[in-house]
Length: 366
Image (tube, rainbow, N blue to C red):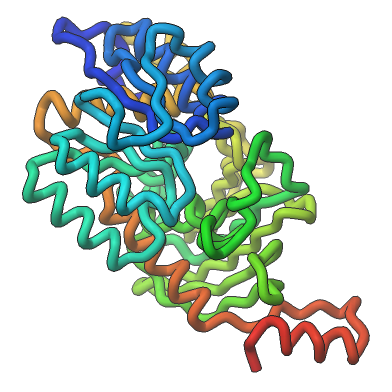
């Protein structure tokens, strides 16, 4: 399975793109994938914006023809802007760019609050502009295959989803503000968890939050866990970490089979079918010709970012909605807000009684 909309080079003129924020995600993924989209004739990066001259210099090596700016208000005109700055800055930047008539692709989380999300979507609707959200994993063929299995009832109803993700934080070039609530907005739940929750919501709809706990003691959380329940009775158990090596897998337990997805695997799934003695490895393929035996591998990790660029370009050109908009992205953010509002202190048995009491005081929970 692969989104075929980006398979060829379009006849229309490439979109002019302004990249706002030249940090780690642009250096590592959005930038290289935009270069590939440029090669395909989908877009042309015409401007780069960042307050740091050093980050601008690094990013300009990817796009030597782009003009560099330290302020968005003085930046060049464009058709589409990518906003890849800390979450607290998304709403004012996006509002300014919408007033200039630009379509938007905003890195997750789309805004700092769901109130901002609603206001921003209203502005985009009024201006007839596309508002897409950078949940790139939605372009993994493996996750689209799981969505189809759930929607079609291939293995019966989902009974339980167990998902954990995390390990030692190694994100390159992350700024100090990333680790503060004032600028970043939260810790591992907002960073990794927002991806996880958006995926689960795209599969199953919005769940009820049964419980949430984390280890934040006046700062951002490093570890967290939660229990969810969907309308059909299916339960979700999630665990996230920035410092513990977890299994990094999503297990979707259907009535008649269990499907496992390993995080970072763009195409592969493990399938355990009721009554079958051995698990089966599924590898999503792109059909070539009439025979499935000639199917070709689909795109990988970086290809998902390129497919995201292609999806947004097609949405702008055709007037359709992007694959990932504020419906699921906003619902995921709303769920994170509910988690933070009802948070409990994570059980940490390694703490002494005195340390736990101090942890409770710092955390602000009972």
